[in-house]
Image 1 (cartoon, rainbow, N blue to C red):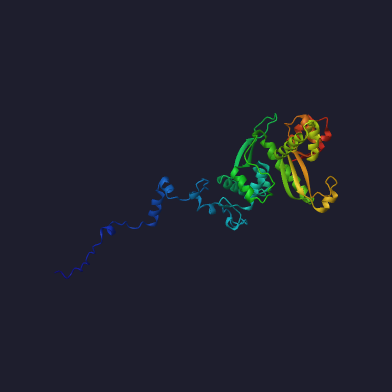
Image 2: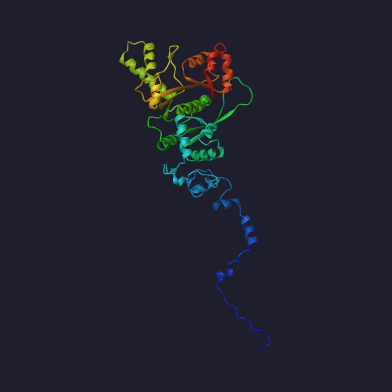
Length: 349
């Protein structure tokens, strides 16, 4: 035996499984290996994407949505979803989202630019996030339609509008807090009239501000759809009660009952009627309303350059609060140039 060599330590035998385990990678090597993973492998691991995913799959987004919708926490003073008790189809809706459902439901169609101004205070990014969420949940539909040309050349303007789905209409009924007699609408009808119909909301906002400043409260809206239906039912009831009565007499009676003008052998129906509650002082001051009445109304009409001169005159003479955009006012001036006084009563949107 050689004593000049150091004694070798015995080799410890380890199980084969331990011998085959790889050594831990250095940080740089581990980083390179992660980067080498394919896109398919990353998707299979459900790694978060840099962009917000609006996929309708609820299982994939369940854990990520609170972070995706929680932008700018330092400056965002809105209540969080969990703090709002109002629930619909398993969701918590913020105040702005409930307001969107209520406003769109009342007017059927509203331009996104008007929602941005009235509901969101011109916070465009916040509106877009909420609309994306509501659309993902099947509550709203967003469409882009062509504006009217009316003989004008140049590039066709596109208008982005919002309507409710049937599920959105049900959600609005449950979450909006609107009176039960307030009619709600869903779906896009008459695409060629979308621009005109979307302008009704702008006219309403101007009138609503004026009414509320005068003390009116609890504003309700009746669109021409509802008014026409009620008038047709009233005409039918009058004809059934007295078949010998002339149609012109029936229409005049119904027009009086609905406090609507009878012009050119027809009942003039506004685009919308705003019904509101009156304070006692206003009831006494308003000579057009019965002293025992506790509500008043204002009829609004939106005119466009597509109207014929006769239609323009009839609407202007009906006594409605008449509105038109600046572009439409310019076009209408030439159509009713002999009736300059009519233009003076047309308010600008």
